[in-house]
Length: 291
Image (cartoon, rainbow, N blue to C red; front, side, top):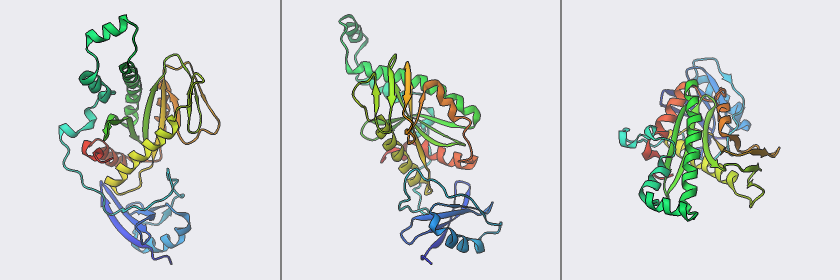
């Protein structure tokens, strides 16, 4: 045996038993109500089953090994961090698409008079890219709202420390998706594993940054829930004339703005109680303060 330990965990409507290594890494978990067992590390399958069977009232129904978004790592499944009660000021569900960019433009951007002068002089400023980004987030946000009809929860403009924000986060039957919007009106886009080229220009690290952003979201959710929460990165390109994806592009989902509805039919990853639990954390502004 490998000194595995079974730990009970009951929260957010879940009643589970986790099988952990001595360092706290989970190798399997079981739903006490259904008897289903999910294996996170295949090599401990038989040992975990031997430990779980005596403690489950339902017949044990093993499920395939879960495919995590990254290799298993140390985590403490029994010590999720408690958030304070949600207040209207901390509820991100009220955010509209592009809230962070809109506030930045309103507080620090040029005045209407300055904008008119810049337009007359055909002078471009950094604020032009912010306004373009805002327009892109509004278009993608409108498409994502369609997913709510299929039981998905959608959050917009989640502000992180150091003036960074998550454009959109969707949580539903098909999992959790961190969405980064890129507005390149009238441009041709080529997407590789890590880099993106706009009109054959200089490579941009959109893919790498999207994966890092998704890992950041995953860390926050797992920290507060105490359970594994894989998060998939998504790049959505707005207004492009052509979108070419290389065959090896698997780590990041890539769509045009009207294609994000393809997430809607995805299912089999989260049940309604899990969706509610993740959404309850994700919508809480204070959960992201140390992200």
